[in-house]
Length: 81
Length: 229
Image 1 (cartoon, each protein chain N blue to C red):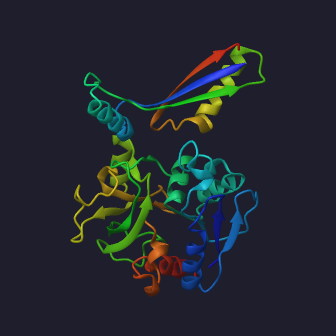
Image 2: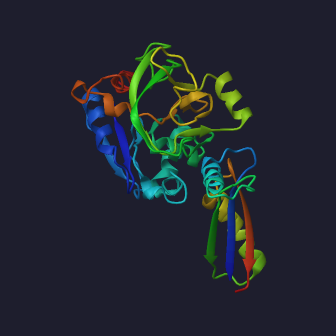
């Protein structure tokens, strides 16, 4: 079973990297970009077969290590394959 | 005074701290490998600067889960003095011993230079040998020193006088221009509630000997030595 985790910055937290990317896109002529927020995407291969249990386990991983919940949100997607 | 320096894979200021502590306390600190689960009785634990675990995932995130850290957290909660410098500060926020987080510098660049700091509080074992409001010069060297916390946390830190150091200009004013990394309220170092845990981005151990070009960092180690004499 596979888990896909997106870690993103919470609203209101400044993202200097996202700002720099937005600026660079503007310089390249992509003028329509109103905002850029940069995050992380993490893929996990799990031995767990039960999607419910897998999700609970990945939740715990996010809280303990994968995300810093002071500034980050996380979203978990469990896929059979 | 008995002290211990925790060494993580990627620590690079552990020996600098050892020199500074030996100089001020007359006794070499124990160097404790991060995989040790036991920690002898000590008066002070130092989490040194560096790039523990290559800053993978987030600065300090992996080190905060190291075997020895459970014991460090337990000791801190019992009142043992814990000092986190630079990466050590990042590790302390990741363990939750200190609130907030250290984000990427606002200017997106690694900043390595001397900065001016204002000593905000002196009623701690770390700052007792400074004068309140004293302006000191200490080096910084980091890419993630941009202190962030929500408004409630910042208010608490201020109300409880837990901001230990602020970035200032040479005259001691905490201006936006004097802020090297975008840290909220020019915060360079903070204390926990019980004031026995200090985290700071600047490196006092790097200017603790005249041979290194300055001694403004030395009173921190002298103060600790005096507190636990």
